[in-house]
Image 1 (cartoon, rainbow, N blue to C red):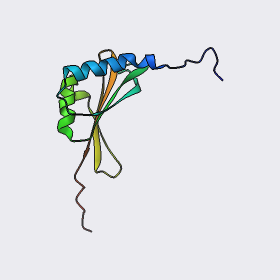
Image 2 (image 1 turned 90 degrees about the horizontal axis):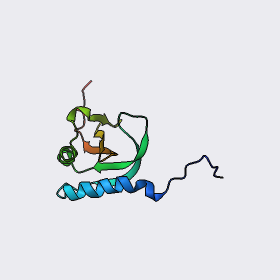
Image 3 (image 1 turned 180 degrees about the horizontal axis):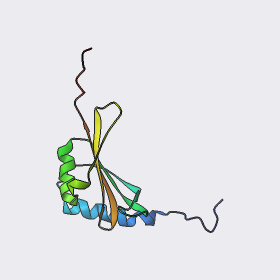
Image 4 (image 1 turned 135 degrees about the horizontal axis):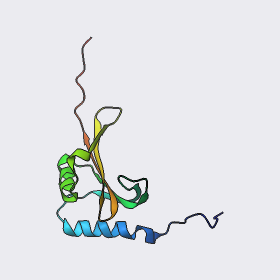
Length: 118
């Protein structure tokens, strides 16, 4: 049951994020393809959430770097994480671009750690 105080999201709420995506792809049409989703994201440096872009790259860090440069992401804000297995890793950065949050993620595989002899 919906009360008068509940907010019901509608497709129109995503228009700003979709517009930024179109603008970004038009301005940088030679960027490597990415998986792009409209996501409800935290706006950097705030406690606010709004619709933004989740940009995932799975084909190498060179593709991440091209997108990083196109978006003007400062390398100092990039986070690095590693899966429990230790071989899958990813870089992430969230910025505001065109007034919407954009989360850039680049996945890659690390070399397996060398086995140690007992």
